[in-house]
Image (tube, rainbow, N blue to C red):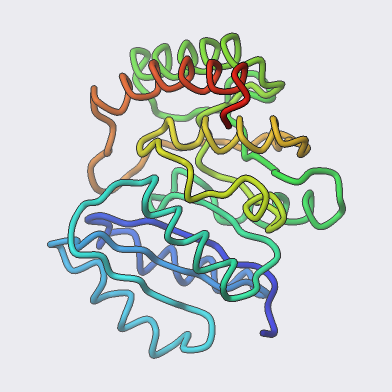
Length: 241
């Protein structure tokens, strides 16, 4: 396999964004892109298939039968990445809230050995979020303070979904054991990596609210994150992670 880097993007109803995102990531060069689509009724997967005609050697698609959740999508993507021999595995959203041009900075951080997990952080350099309502900002910032306090992790953006991970991290922490599915998935991934002795670093990014489509945030996702940090902390203390 010629390329060492895979970018994983889960999608559900992202037809307005996915074509542009694919073009942008592919323009950066030296990376492959895996889209995991959860049966989007808006034709997201069809757009990806059309783009595969243009990027046949670098663009891959896994179609799942329904909306099975962010966490299970990433676990499926991680399994694909490890089986396919990629060394550097990235996560990002499909809605351009994460700027694809930041990918090389995250990847380089891991390639240089400065981190095993390089996190695109909204809170590493103050608050770097554009176009969020104040209520959403307060919820996110408070949730991250809460998770950081309970878990003890040395990072500010515990729920960040934009990152680059060295394959040795995923091999060590057994991603199949991750049970969280919403934003708690990111907390659990970071926590398991940190507890296993891997280095986490934060790379400051500017996070922009999506321009097209609908946010996937829900009350159940928030509650999962609130309770999951306690479960992780207790499991860690009892040596069950």
